[in-house]
Length: 135
Image 1 (spheres, rainbow, N blue to C red):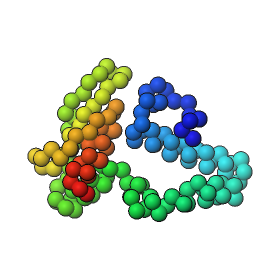
Image 2: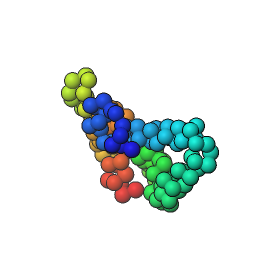
Image 3: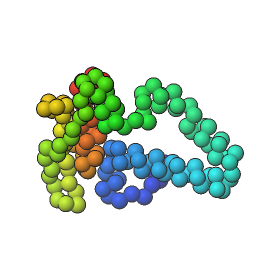
Image 4: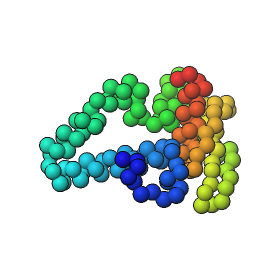
């Protein structure tokens, strides 16, 4: 599906969470179009062949949960602390900024993450923090 989407230059360069959201929305739209065009049985068959075989992997790896949510859950469970995020630096022109965000447990900077938006940088920081903590 990725190869058939018409994206802006910025979106086309992005390979992070934003791209995953775009792909998920496009997939959902395709299912809706199949339902409207072919009915329930056509949509059900498509979902069955394209999605059901991936559910074990989704559950095992907790892929429904983004890294920021997962890190918050584990930080509260294991350390009793809610993570806090701070922009450490930003660079580039307004239309093409890059953000570096640190994630902290109390005063300890656990990890940093980089992204084209603050939210993407926070997700990357949380993902790096999960690895750094071995969670």
